[in-house]
Image 1 (cartoon, one colour):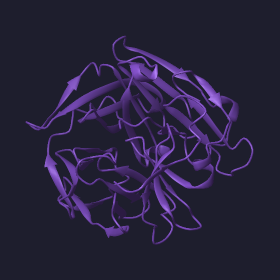
Image 2 (tube, one colour):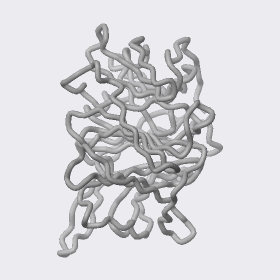
Image 3 (cartoon, helix red, strand yellow):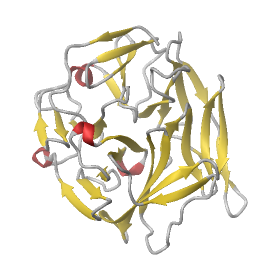
Image 4 (cartoon, one colour):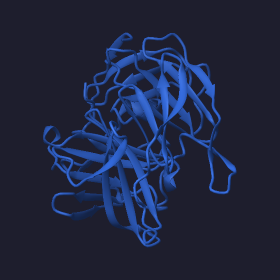
Length: 331
């Protein structure tokens, strides 16, 4: 593991948090909302104010100093840092970040930065000496026999399990990014879950939880993306492989969100009881509906839904990026 350090500024509220950031760095620019205490705070988090920051489903946040190009991972609950090599240039204007594994994994973990506007990714091994740049070309065959280019970061879901990164690719396969140790793109043949024609509008999220891979499908009511009709959860059975529908997720919560209008979806998980939350719940920050920042809370055991507006005092327009999740880590 790379050298580490700590900063003295943990978040003002208990994790997990939703962060609403207007991006101008001035007074009132940043608001956090704790889903456990249902309380807001306008106390700025220094790392988010002073750096370009990219949340990951593993809880660690990638930070870039635009002036020096220094990069590091930081852990929101205590400010611990994992130093990374400097970037060669600024990261893309819009990008998505995730880790292939936790920074303390027995085998080396990698940090991925996926460009949301082009088929490129930046990769850095934790403990490595540089960032590497990759350009990829992934295509899928359509029913008419034609080929269509696929953009990894703009697909419906992406998650890392067991040192591999999985992304939704087609109706018959998951895409896989492997590190062996060289980066290579492969696929896993598995049929997609049933998506009924009676529910034409939906959004899919891949979630890693306790070493397992889940798929969450949020079905909207007809073509109204402001109303949710159903949330379906599936667990990947790698021995088949096949998606198995589940009606409980136990003592944990799933946290969903992403870039605006589904350009890139985000899915993560954390313990419920350890963070003062009710288990078997899914928290969905609706990133599909334009100009909305509603938080939908689905209790799978009770079959109930609650809708909150944690940033209703902020009004419109929306910030440069939708509200995003800051999470506890499993380390």
